[in-house]
Length: 555
Figure: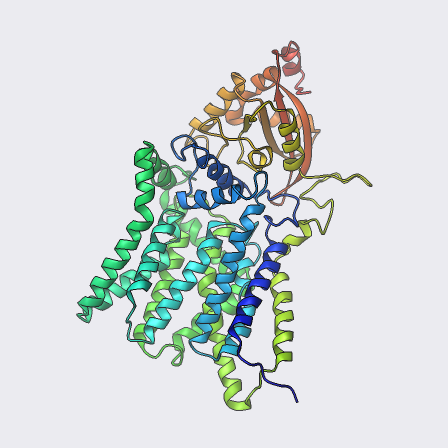
């Protein structure tokens, strides 16, 4: 006779910790199981974060577009690991533990501890699903647990006459401040929650609760923001912060096309998301339909309206918040906290049905099998691990594997060259591309305002490429890294063609004159075949420059 599982909450927590470590170790590029985290965004954040910890002022001294809390987290990780993003692993693990814990607490509002625990084992799939999780470490991933906690507070309040404690308002207000100064397009759930609750309290003349909302949320919001405002004022960077974080993001970033066209593109992307990925239909759409007709989870129409309103505002903010920018797949991770919760609602419905009709037991064996199935299910939802050290010589390491010869990604091999041959702190520029990890691996700090070329069209913001070309023309850095996405022809032809097009023409001849090619390496970059080139500054101008330009040569 199998014994039923006895409730031991500390075992639940320990399981969440162990499972989170396994998931992040195997799926995050920041894991030591991977050769190097080549994520452009994560390395951007890391470079600015570590620079900030060494007196370089974001927005004023270096150009990058995310909020200061993002740089703070990555800056802290740079204190743990200097030449890699492995230091981000603890932060990702903590985020995943909170995600599983909040899934458990949400399920616990409707089910027993044991069933809630089993459900929570499967929920990480919504946080690491490919292609939305991507490399890991995105702002969307770190906001995920905060959104879940907000949903939990809303659901719990709906069971308690919408009476929310002062400290819960404090936490939510602080999180609004953190998200506002991280990536404000992710504020949709809080906008929906606060607007709905404020109107609800005013309509029902519950002014005490209304003032509690305003006072405690406002106070903690200021606690989150005021230290940064003081920092910007003291460092003389407040104007630069407002210009970059708000003005540039809203007007210049991805500024090609008119706003109505962008709205249509955003809508099309959202529809593609709904139709292309079956999990969004199976769990998201079915869960939404269940919510619309449910009479068990939501005891009244107001509770249901609150949840749906938060869900709708979140979708609108996530999609149309990027009207002024580009839309990438990892943005869509912002939808998944709500898809996770609607899935929990569906599971609650089925479990209640089985329990009432079959008196289904929950023995230890069942939990052990569920845990194995959950790990298989979660890890099977993302194939990042095929690019890890478990698969040597994979495409993210090299496109030209050599039998019996160990190879490493360009970031690692170039970083070693730069560190070994630089006198003191190396000076570096990633020319015409995002930072793909070379500042990270080399230990270089930005020495120029535009230390990379962000995803902003040159015609909309020509300052970036003018600055990069000036660096090359005046030989202002010792090292240059250039990435060329592979096309037909020899490597030399591809590099020359790349440097001869668009705004890069101003740097081509100066590159041949002032720099010499030290190394090149071909590997995959985000599903594209690419070749990285490392150039070193010449001690004297190249006497053969004119001949090399005429013959289209860089060597």
